[in-house]
Image (cartoon, rainbow, N blue to C red; front, side, top):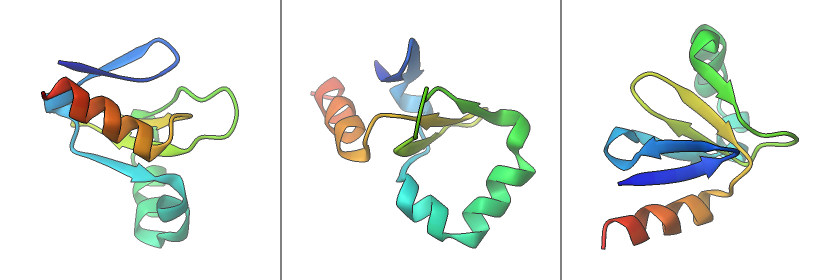
Length: 79
């Protein structure tokens, strides 16, 4: 199963390690350091402000889709 995370991007549900709200990410110094350290694997698919960070083994997606919406999409795919 795949989850649409924004733009034309689909991520395999089994590849998703975590989905984090951007407010949490922005307030966390360790998360900011990780984003900076791994910036080559960060994919910004938001045209404007982003709302969530989707972490997979190979990429971190900055997405305009809210955490609650991504969770609903993932839950619907597992039923």
